[in-house]
Image 1 (cartoon, rainbow, N blue to C red):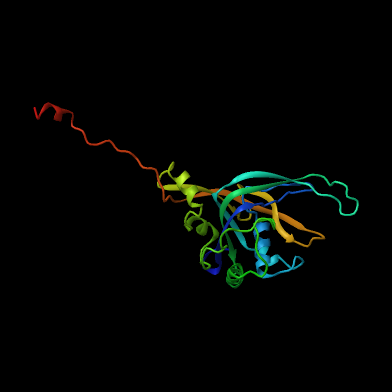
Image 2: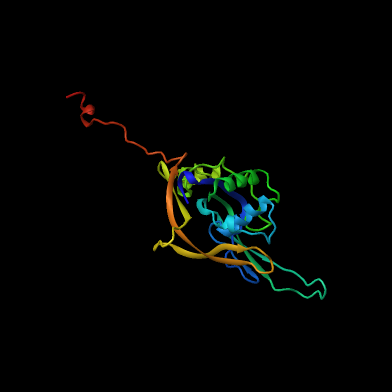
Length: 245
């Protein structure tokens, strides 16, 4: 889906901590390097006020893309617990997070649904979180009203959303543009796409299910507000020292 028949909703996902797991099991809870489609669909479903057992097919059918504006730092946390009845120690839980990360994401699809999502993220039924309940966003999620553009254009056209301190630190080492990595839902049959088990089918706690989706990695360039200063040598005429001779 692309073009004028669809709308795309630009989002910004920023917070002190984020955790986007796609293969977490048992005591080890990992995170991907960027927000997953299943995680963002869960966020949108919560904003709409949908129950965990509700049908997700309309949200899963949205095209999805994400851009890494500030990749963040991977951090690890250990958690301990005790059984409430026996008092015995439970296995140590190892959890990973992305610290100080900022991403631009976009979903594209049916205009009526996308407009509904826009209103939902501006006034969510359930408070959104960035992958886990312990990871609240530090900014409003929306980046403006839906646009009649495909996901790829949204990721290309949005200004750099990294924190000001990060833009200054990184931008001053770069030229007038910054290159940012992207992951976008691939077209069927794209031979250069990778597969991720990240297509949400059901969030029912009794039987969570995820299917495979094809994604294609790439990059876009955006204007750099803090480009490095290029020092230029002053004009110099060697014969001027001879007094005009």
